[in-house]
Length: 61
Image (cartoon, rainbow, N blue to C red; front, side, top):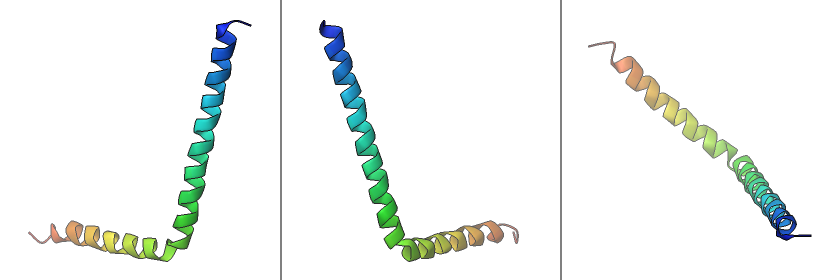
């Protein structure tokens, strides 16, 4: 076994570690989004209202 074998093992382990870290972050964000769903929905409604107001305000001029 030469150095390319060990390099391949290290690269595979690094890729596995990065994917586990990324999925862990995703699971954490899904959990926190589920807990704050009502607050997030309320903020989205506020933003939609602001954009709707800006859109329709341009038609009277």
